[in-house]
Length: 184
Image: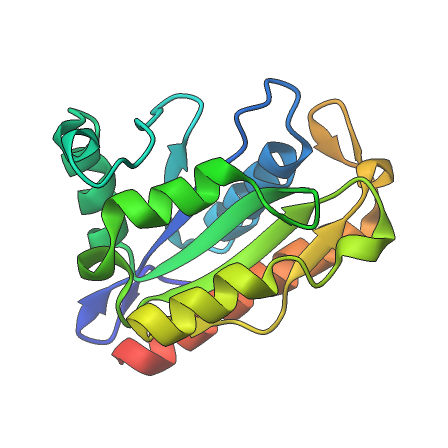
């Protein structure tokens, strides 16, 4: 797929929000990047381990020197895939903090898809609170094809579950498709 679609340039930002060095959501995010690049889609990468943000305090945290670059990456993206770990039936605090720190200017009317890594099958609806917040607060378009996987899906730096790998590819291409439809 050509990353120059119609009159605009397509760029998908994949965000890894896990702060865990052994992150499984990051492994799945890397798979999404590989799928997008294999399809010829311009892909950008934001890893909150590599670019940590201060915790939002409603004031001084907005002076974080990393924040302008992070905001620009989000603003420049045609579509976004957020890879999040699920802790205690919710996305991790770093994902929520990213949204609080970047706000309306970054998320309004963007297309967002989710890749979730969790410890068990019972938390598959956990991403809905964040998705609802993005939809209601910022009019973000949420791709309804989430990827939700447990620890068995990855081994080391690889996605080893064929079904999960296929769902990551489907989500990645769906983000491209919806982003193209909304911008084209």
